[in-house]
Image (cartoon, rainbow, N blue to C red):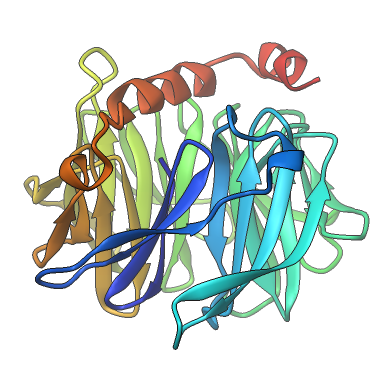
Length: 311
């Protein structure tokens, strides 16, 4: 249910407790890349976060219920991984980022934590994700209580501003030319200055599940009732947001360089390019629609209830 990219032809994704690798070219293949050892008891668990470092040499793979996590060393030439580190956390990890070779993650208690160190910042609600600004001076985090937070870094307790205006949980955010583009369950995209001023807004009409890109890229929107998800292109220009028509069906997107990938129930592939069918390869119904619909239901929980579930 999670997707990431390791190069411009290759994506990785999770199904249940296994990490797969897909060569997204004509005649491409899907193969298992990593299966956790039996002693870790994650065979009935699902992935809560999947990330790849900017140099494409590290993969981080986290589980929801067992809170088991893996840092994998990825060898691009052999398309294989070795386990660099296994560790467990007391709370479920919801997202990862690398900075200066260090791993940071946000967890089910509303904190962003440096791996092996102390919490960097905390929200009063669960943090859905975060990223470091391109200038390295800020950390931007977003939560289930409708907020985008811009904090100074490395002293993240020094909050520069909040972006306030969404009316439901903030599901995704990316940097766009010194601004922040956020998407929410309220069906809107908002463009924020680093001082928390809303420079533009766009009504997509459906809850936003994911955003991938910068000034131009793709977003995933999803109908809560049907569970159908689709990919649409977006562009930000002169503080104006535009969103195009649907270009693909899919629940998650990832990007490497100029290549964007999409994961759907039927296939994984390059948006507008080659894809690899999954149903025939796996011989099973992936049931991604049901899994993602359940994720949306959980994302809509009040913070207190969601915290109780993570305890």
